[in-house]
Image (cartoon, rainbow, N blue to C red):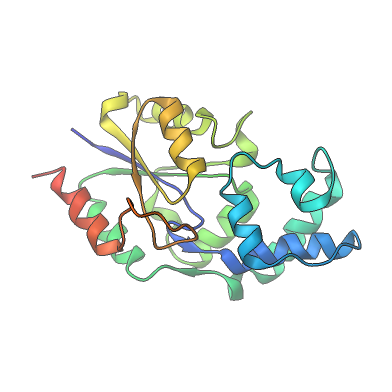
Length: 207
């Protein structure tokens, strides 16, 4: 029986497409690079085959100033450039009595806490694991293993809910179930199309 849920954040719970693309373009402007189209940035964020430091900034690895500039823009603008997808807070409220909820995001802890608290959903999660707290973020399974260790649960008791290949590959690597949603940045034919549909599927695990 499924008793534990892991949610992805960006593109699953939160429409952060503007803040992410604008933060990356802010760093690019600091480097003297032309802005990228929002669609190109979001596709790259979800494409696990792309070496993102090279793609976004023309470097082999992110440098300290890249991270600092990204965080600077994010901290100053997240409150006006991020929103919950319609029905997400109601979904969390309705399913919380039936499941242990957790969140796994490649965002840095500082950024994730800012946005989750501002949007009023931080306290729904018993554990939140961020990209700067594990050796290897998604699509590696490190975050999932950390959450499973926290709960002390088995693979068949927990599933990941996310919107992209990064999430899907992380779930596969960890050997757990995966539910793909399609109201975020991705366009998959075989995905759950609405928050209401996801709610019905999750509650069906308890009937």
